[in-house]
Amino acid sequence: MKLILAIVQDKDAGTLSNNLVDANVQATKLSTTGGFLKSGNTTFIIGIEDERVDDVLTIIKETSHAREQFMAPPVNIDVTGDSAMSYPIEVQIGGATVFVLPVDQFHHF
Image 1 (cartoon, helix red, strand yellow):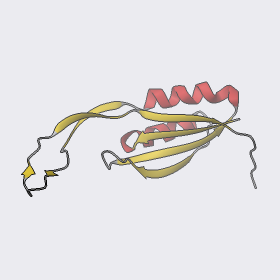
Image 2 (cartoon, one colour; image 1 turned 180 degrees about the horizontal axis):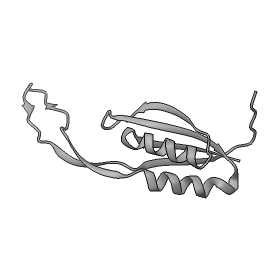
Image 3 (cartoon, rainbow, N blue to C red; image 1 turned 180 degrees about the vertical axis):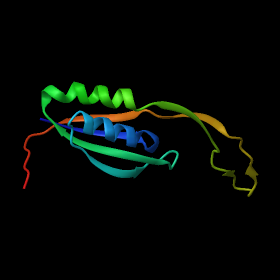
Image 4 (cartoon, rainbow, N blue to C red; image 1 turned 90 degrees about the horizontal axis):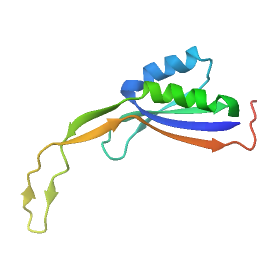
């Protein structure tokens, strides 16, 4: 048995959730926030049999898409108190970050 932790952008979470239900994969969803962009993410916690891991990874890969987005970097203030104006930069967001972990024991009470 494996534990899959999949962190996806909120824009992809609904579709991913529906696709997992269609594939009869049970998951727990948690609302999370990314540290870099401070944007909303959803973390899926999935316990799955070893032979189904590749199927779940395929669903996640096909559902989670990377996008380009503009963000304003934080304002830099130096020791003199002057602030440097910064311009929005384009960054890639989305996709999925997925961890697959071995499970030594599983209990359902």
